[in-house]
Image (cartoon, rainbow, N blue to C red):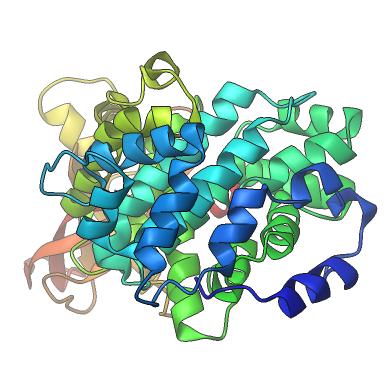
Length: 440
């Protein structure tokens, strides 16, 4: 984060809020929360530092050491294996030696702002659940940093920790209206949709207003504003940061939300698939690492370990839920061969597969196929033309619960088939489950 000058601070304090990226009313009174917008003095002092100057490290040590609560929380975070290597960080000076003044300064700013926001006593928001999600998102951001490649790891983590602070703003400014919205939302994405419909602004807009008032780096401010729409930024580095925040938010859906599970895991895997090294196994490893780190990071925002007691088991629980969901989609309850030949497609019936729909950058091509059979982990179809091994396609699979799940299959074999009317036999395995567009 670049240092803040007196002139920049004055401009922020005197200027109206900038237009929001999606055209909503950025000057809405619902975004105006002076109690949260004015940062603590230590944040202002830290942000005025030029972190690349020779004496910057000493200045960071002096400022953080003068704030006992901030010092304790910074050391808790550092000793949650934040910089890897398993080193015990003995003090803020040692942290500066390990990571450098800019990194320590950024983390100190983020933790001070989290503590400042945490002093707000929400009227309708579950404060423990809010901070549990924030810690899970920050832990996921740390685990995702090598794949996201969005610049400084600390910027990504701090942005993830603070990206939903707008929830606390709307809780204060919309009061009972927001309480009803918050309590009625069953998912984080559903919360944003309800905010937009009922208030005309979202918590992302409110988070952006806060981050701007706090004089955070402009790139961080925009990425926070766009964490539900990560393709919106035009600057490549900001877009990478916004993508990292969007992924961290989806990871928090798995780790921290009661309604997480199969859908949340499928959604996270799909979103992560475009990142280097984040196939399904890589995505699951990120969740496991984040779950372990989140428990250790709880104290950095004043949470007791009990608040995250269920987080460590969340990844395994979600994997089992997704596996069970897929089994239910492919089985009818019969035994033996009946399970292979009697799923909820008519045998030899015509089905539609969507070629290209598994990739966000491709145009889906509906193709008619004849259903052959299915097992717990795959499907067999007949096509007029061949498919390449490794090619993916989507089928909306009828489910026992009356839904149709968009399931991605990956071709594992293709050969010329005998018999009239069947040119190629395709065997494919389940790759992942997409989020149903109707459920967004």
